[in-house]
Structure formats: structure tokens, C-alpha cells
Length: 466
Ligand SMILES: *[C@@H]1O[C@H](CO)[C@@H](O)[C@H](O)[C@H]1NC(C)=O
Ligand SMILES: *[C@@H]1O[C@H](CO)[C@@H](O)[C@H](O)[C@H]1NC(C)=O
Ligand SMILES: *[C@@H]1O[C@H](CO)[C@@H](O)[C@H](O)[C@H]1NC(C)=O
Ligand SMILES: *[C@@H]1O[C@H](CO)[C@@H](O)[C@H](O)[C@H]1NC(C)=O
Image (tube, rainbow, N blue to C red; front, side, top):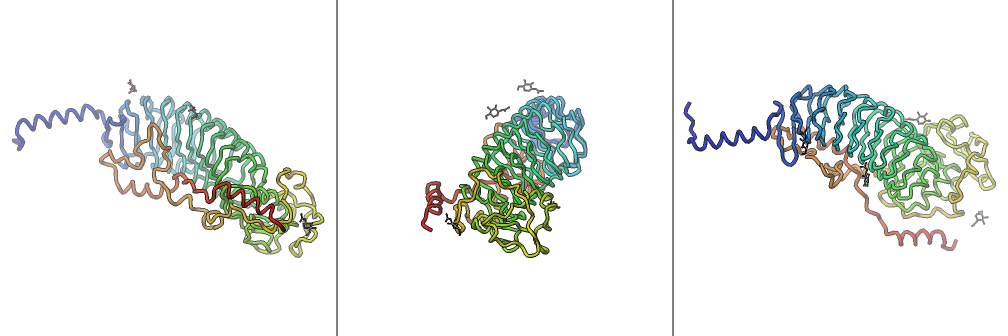
């Protein structure tokens, strides 16, 4: 049929088409390929059930998220030696071949999140990814971190492991991650923080451990975290926390400990004393026991409130029935021997205090309570920290692109694979809202008071006339 276009226009169209073909070819059927700003193959939300076989080997970015891919074979990306960004999130992955990413020495960003059926990753899967700076493994149904899973990932800065089913933190799991700044472990089933769990994390800035089942923190668990600024342990199962564990956190600014079954008796004194001198912002620590202090904020108690040994006499919020056996279970130190001062203390009726003096002598010198203060008010008691409901503020005010390290060299159009004309805006919205929530960075909170004023206040509370 004769074309409505004049010959010149037809020729021009033909030349343009050739040009596009030359730039993009060969491009897999369901994908859009382009060369600027990076050589990119984008096939998001196409209903793909397998990784396309003919992905251009020059690809620097490959977007395959929002499909129904079940398997990443060993050969999937083998020839793509220049690959820096690979998104496979929101698929139906059940298996990743252990060598699927082998040889991708330039890979900087790997997103495997939201593949709830994955459940396990071979411990050698990430070997050799020496330039990787962001690894998303959140919402993958992971039960455990295999031995050496993160070995050699010296450039890693962001590690997302939240909302899995992790049952434990293995020793030395993050040992090689000397450049890691963000470690997200919230929303798992982690029961405790053992001594060697966070060894080697000398650059860590944010450690999110909230919404787990943490009942015990080893006194040396945070030894290497001298640069940590944010620590979230709210919504866990802590009845006690050794002050010794917090001592190495010299850079700490934001601490959340609410929603834990705190036992506010003599065993909480070292923690109480640490909180009195802490200059950052901290949440409330509502006591669970003893019942006469239930709901009171540990930080605001007087030293004299923390006397005797708490045991529960009836149903209470705490999962605690009293008795030495339960103390061991809870990871609480054995209760202290009532001393002269403690004799005046109120013990719960009908529950004899356990004997033993395990805590005494373990209290670091600086951790003894200051004396007869009547509940000094501290600058930590910001509106931020005191509202139990304010456990969540960091998860509000999110920046959807929050997971991108600012100024990263190869920041891809995360959540904006819009250059692919086939990407579905609806899919992006769905992902953008729910998922951005999960992975957004915690925004920095403004300090409430400048240090000199806070220091003066603390000095005043200590030195004021009785
Ligand atoms: C990778 O990039 C380099 C430099 O731009 C180029 O010479 C090489 O051909 C690329 N490799 C592949 C597999 O495209
Ligand atoms: C770790 O970070 C430092 C400082 O930013 C940098 O010089 C070093 O190259 C990084 N290490 C790796 C393996 O990327
Ligand atoms: C909290 O810790 C206690 C004592 O270790 C344990 O019995 C209880 O099951 C824990 N609760 C949860 C939710 O893990
Ligand atoms: C603390 O209180 C006790 C008893 O109330 C009192 O004997 C002691 O002198 C007080 N110590 C200080 C430093 O005020």
C-alpha cells in the first residue's frame, strides 16, 4: 500500500529506526534497552518466568524486578562482565545457583529482596563481589546466614536483612564488612546478641535490631561499634541490658529501648547509671517489674527505687514467674544480696528474693549509682524519647530513595525505571510505598539541645544543694 508519507520522510524514519536498532540491539523481547547514561537492559513487570537468555553482554544495569522469575541459573549473567547494578527483587525466586554472580567483579548493587520463597542462599553466592556496596536480602524468608555468606565483601556499605525469619546471629558473620555503615536486622526472630556477632563492623553507623526476640546481649557484643550513632532494640524481650555492652558506643546518639519487659530492680542499676550520663537521645524504658514500678520509666527512677529483687506474684506484662531458674532463662544476672540499703526496699509479697550476689563486683567503676538523687531529669528525656509510641518515627518521614547511598557512583533509577516505557506505574507505586517503608534509611533526628546547655543541666542536677 502506498505510504501517506513523502519519500524523504520515509527515508528519515528508516534511518532513525536503523539508528535505534543499532543502539539497542539485540534486546530481549520483553525488555527495553538503551545506552545512556549507562548500558541498560530493563524488563521490569513483564510477567517473565525466567531470566531472558539474550541479555546484551555489554549491559551495565539489568532490571528484572516485578516478574515471576523462579530461578537464577549459573549462566544467567556470566558474560555481563561490566554489570554494576542488578535488580531481581519482587520475583518468585526459589533458587539461586551458587555461581550465578561469579565473575561480576564490578557489581555494586544487588537487589534480591521480596522473594519470600527463597528461604536459603548458598554461602558462596556472593564470593568475589569485591565492589558490592549495597546488598538487599530483605523479605527473602531467610532462616539463617550460612557460614561465610558475606566473606570478602569489603566494600559493602548497606546490608538489608530485615523481615526475614533469621533465628540467630552467627559468630563473625559480618567480620569482613569493615566499610559497612548500615545493618538492618529488624523484623526477624533473633533471640540474642552473642559476643562475636558484630565483630569487625568498625564503620557501622546504624544497627537496627528492633522487632526481634532479643532477650540477651553479651557484655562485649558491641565492642567494635565505636562509630555507631543509631541503635534500635525496641520491641524485643530484654529484661536487662549490661551497661558494659553500651560502654564502647562512644558515638551513640539515638537509642531506642522501649517495648521490652524491663526488670527495674538492683540489677538495673548499672544500666540506669549509664543512662544518666548518656548525652544522646534515648527512648523511654517502661518497667515491667516490679509491679509497684510497672510502667514507670527506668531512666526517671531514683536510685533508691532500684532496690531489692523483683519477682512477679501474679499475671503481669512480663514473661517472668520469679525464681532463680527463670532468672537464668531470662539472661538476668542473679539477684543481688540485699545490702543495708536494700533492706528497706519493697519486695513483692509472697516472693522471697533469691540470694546471690553475682552482679556486685561486675559493675564497672563508673557505673555505680551517684547516690541519693531524687530522680534527676535528664536531657535525654526528649519528647522523642519519652513517648512509647514514638518507637516508629524513624520509619515515618521516609525518603523513598532512602536506600541509595547519596552520591553513589552508579545510582540507578531505583523506583524510577521510567526510561523503560513498559514499566508499570502501578507496580512502582505499590513497591514504592510499601517497600520504600521497609528499606528507607532512618532519618537523622535533630538534637534537642546543644551540648553545653545539656552539660550544664547535668552538672546542676548533680551539684545542686539537697
Ligand atoms: C566493558 O567496558 C569496557 C570499557 O568500556 C569495554 O571495552 C568492554 O568491551 C566492555 N565489556 C563488555 C563485555 O561489554
Ligand atoms: C572502604 O572505605 C574506605 C574509605 O572510604 C575506602 O578508601 C576503601 O577503598 C573502602 N574499601 C573497599 C574495599 O572498598
Ligand atoms: C522471652 O524470653 C523468655 C525467657 O528467655 C522466653 O521464655 C520467652 O519465650 C521469650 N519470648 C519471646 C516472644 O521470644
Ligand atoms: C543518702 O541517704 C542516706 C539515708 O537516707 C543518708 O544516711 C546518707 O547520708 C545520704 N547520702 C548522701 C550523700 O546524701
